[in-house]
Length: 375
Image (cartoon, rainbow, N blue to C red; front, side):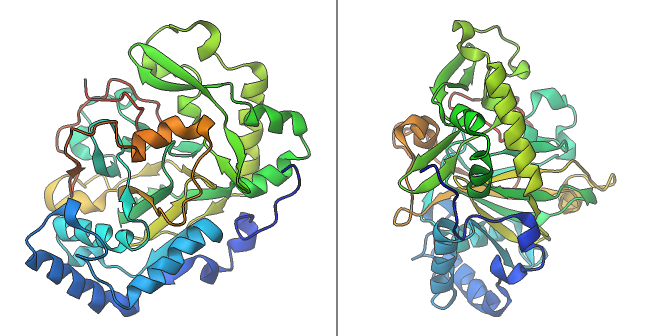
């Protein structure tokens, strides 16, 4: 497929700015049903791993959420669910509701690191400030994050527990739209499609695997680009162990520049509020985050919600899934496969850990690598 892509997943930010109905869904009419499902689940005396569409029944909202899943795989590739009042619930109940709603969209959850963290927290907790920013993952700072994908993830799912005092906006860009633009620059397009990009899989020692950044797969444009994982990242603090494999070529560096320029050109800034759930087809849509400032008086305990805080799930709808090409499969297997961490219990924490565990490696962007583990 080397022709312009025309479909619901091909859009530009300027097209969506005045069309909130094309991507936003209102949960307000279904809040009593959500509360009833929460109480039913609590009566079962189960915990996070047991939340699914059966233990968290949503007889009216459930079919609507199945349509949301179709919008993610067959529509624009992102949906904003609006109407939850997260201040009304405890931290544990917020997590259960997040898991319950999302289970009607994608039943399979991906592991987000080798320790099998299933719910992660995107925040810059005040308790973590004793750890230098360069030793933390990018999602655990308030710095800007460039356009990227969470490598391996299919449906990136974010619950906005709280937004920042200023900044922190999430922007999206359509891979299909970018692909159509790249047809005018065939050399750049072929560079992105070539399976010779050095994707860093571990930090100590550095280990790489060649993969493409962009692919045509069964009629879908799939993108898997995280600048922090392409080539040897400076934060690794290691020298290459595999010769020139870790070094990006001039053509690749130029291709990344063009990719980012086109993403910025067609970017859509999501008007997210506290309580929103943003779902993104991570195979079809790039995302970035602006830098932000928190309320300086916000700390732990009761004040924690005054700081920007998102809860993150990696979902997959097995019936609708596009799958991934073999050349991009390694990160996908790390998230959804059965082998990595199969003897480790899945972890569901409703709040960020008070003590920040410094990872062995950080790419500075989405969070982790296949062999990322606490030092």
